Image (cartoon, rainbow, N blue to C red; front, top):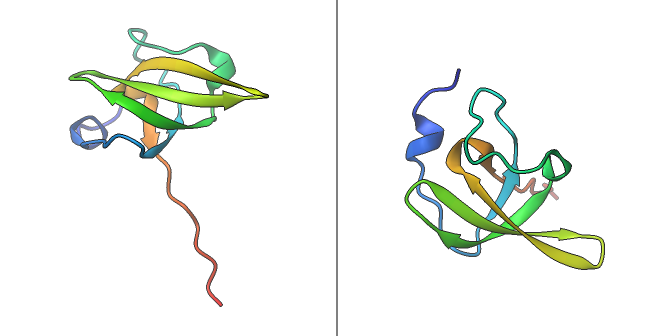
Length: 79
C-alpha cells in the first residue's frame, strides 16, 4: 500500500517517467513487458498518462494510471 504523495504529483508533457507496475491496483495496469521501461509523457489526463516508450526500433504508446508511473530521476556525475 502506498501513500497519496505519488498520486498527487503533477506531471508535465515531455517529462521522463518510469513504468513501475503496482500489483495492488489492477485498473489501468500496463502490460508486464513495459515494467521498468523509461518513457516520455505525451498527454496528461485526470487519472492517467499517455506515455511513449521506445521498444526496439518502434515507439509504443502506453496508457497507464498514476499508480503505475514514477518520475525518472537522472543521476548527474560530479566532476
